[in-house]
Image 1 (tube, rainbow, N blue to C red):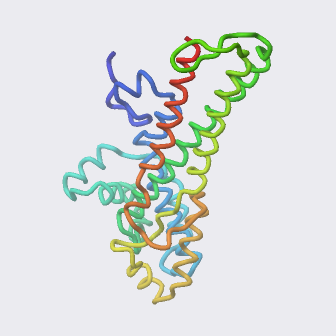
Image 2 (image 1 turned 120 degrees about the vertical axis):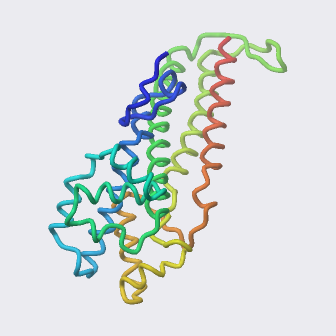
Image 3 (image 1 turned 90 degrees about the horizontal axis):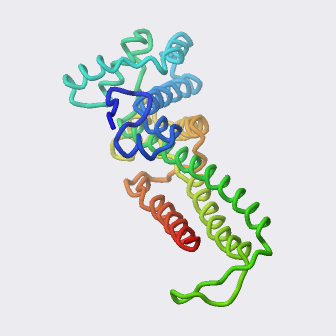
Length: 267
């Protein structure tokens, strides 16, 4: 299989091109990631203007909103060689097409305010894609269970055939597993916590300085940005463990194990 490694509208690897759905490839693409970076820069600037940063104008906000997706990857690569920093390179690339807004981009932020919040949205949307597909599987399996609820088959225990059951009954047992996994995945997706705009060391010092020490205004800005990217819950303090994917992987791995067992049951 020949990979088109120059694509930016989807994630490309041998695994993605063989096994991954198009919507998942698009979610993990460069286009999605870097346009989301721009959306967060826009959301922060818009919130800062609303909350009283007078240097930010309507014209700057409008200019940024018009250039969320026209990403010049060649320019970004050139600037990354210069700055040795991906976020700064893409901020300046954004500034090239938004010269009016360039001076007010990234005010009070550190790079993880952009990258970590983007990854949270990516994890949430990825889990939602999986949940949607799992819900379709549950719906189809429920219809299958109803169709064959009276069809007898041998049960199976201790690695051998056992007492008679029905195909529908076996399918309902699989349904129970899948439904529990769906609830677990939804719970994780709906309870991810906004990394916030905590700055380099988690103190919000830069943002507090921008708002003359007004902590309530900084909190309002966080709430505004959280609503914009649809992450409902805030972090009281920032720590790398808070965005660890381990819990997400555990739920997905458990779901995968169940589906593997279901497949074996059908043999």
